Length: 288
Ligand SMILES: Cc1cc2nc3c(=O)[nH]c(=O)nc-3n(C[C@H](O)[C@H](O)[C@H](O)COP(=O)(O)OP(=O)(O)OC[C@H]3O[C@@H](n4cnc5c(N)ncnc54)[C@H](O)[C@@H]3O)c2cc1C
Image (tube, rainbow, N blue to C red):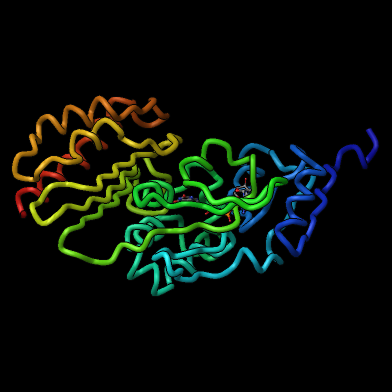
């Protein structure tokens, strides 16, 4: 065998300066090309599965993918290439999106958060920010040959290959007595582990203590985020004082579906997720 045949060919690295140019490279090379933001997940894929696209489209030089700002509509707009650490250190996140800040603080070690981006965490498909972003009903701006569009994050997640992620818009939730949020990631160790079960919830209620906005999301263990639609409907428009907690628990349990993983059975993971939500509702109602 010739020496050249034994050494794998290094990928071509493209360095576009605009979103439009980056998408042009993607269209040119199709499935043989992959965007690279922080590269932390791409590195895992290369090391564990030996997969590396022959064309890597680096997003580093695209200034339009940077920046965190507050918009007049009351959202935090974050460029897709902003790192997780930049989000975590930004006052807008701490004050306006504490549930997302909490989610980010559970991701990897500081070195991963310094390199990994919010965009990469979203497109990766099972990133830990997703339950929090979906609970807040975040939207995203994307770009493809048809131009720019802004759609619910939930919709983009159905087909992330259809467009490049440009920015994420997170509704600002200011601290108030009529709202509650919760995020919990359960893993096999205290820190630096993939999630076995992650739950996120955001709730608001009116002055008569009737629930108005109820968003319950569960993910974990290679399980893409799932919205608990039936449970949300049972709770929405119910008054806190009359909420039947046992009915909520039964509904949550039948709503949540997990497959078994290497370390835990699906039924165990379903029970953990159900109990995490149930105890939050129980405490909220008892303290109200
Ligand atoms: C040791 C270690 C621990 C980790 N722990 C966690 C953890 O606890 N929780 C967690 O959620 N993740 C974890 N990860 C996974 C990963 O590092 C993070 O999810 C990170 O946020 C990915 O961001 P990135 O910028 O590095 O993505 P990249 O690796 O650059 O990209 C990830 C995917 O997104 C695509 N992509 C990136 N940007 C765009 C864009 N703008 N438009 C379209 N597609 C795009 C890429 O093509 C690729 O398919 C860990 C990784 C490592 C190595």
